[in-house]
Length: 172
Image 1 (cartoon, rainbow, N blue to C red):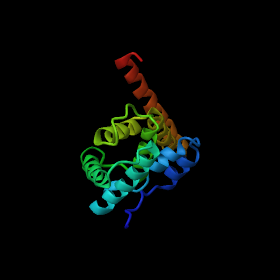
Image 2 (image 1 turned 60 degrees about the vertical axis):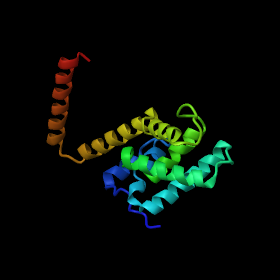
Image 3 (image 1 turned 90 degrees about the vertical axis):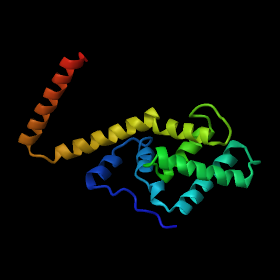
Image 4 (image 1 turned 120 degrees about the horizontal axis):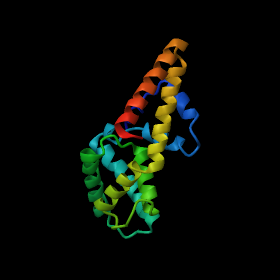
């Protein structure tokens, strides 16, 4: 299997990962992993099948017909092409694992509706979203720390003006 390269990170992005909390790091590492759409269709179907097979076992279901699991893999592949183009292999694994243990809602059986719910739940998970925000903030902080003092002052001034304008508009 030929994997497409992971997202290339610059020094600041790598440095920002290193200062995240231990619970945030895996979420960011999953985000920058190999994209499922970077695989060939056959490789992608096989990878999805492999992950769904583990999910089937983890869920306690062992009576799903192999043909049904292959068909579900194709359906999930279409779902990813349609709705989750930036999904990585690790994110899909994490969504399935957390979904199986009930973190993302009601169980409808090993079907497309359940998988879609798991993906939505994972991608909209508050802890994941906060980890991404924190990572981005640390990258931004890294970028401003390299700037000369007079530029830092200008950036701070611009931020204060933006915050005040936002306050005037929203009252918060």
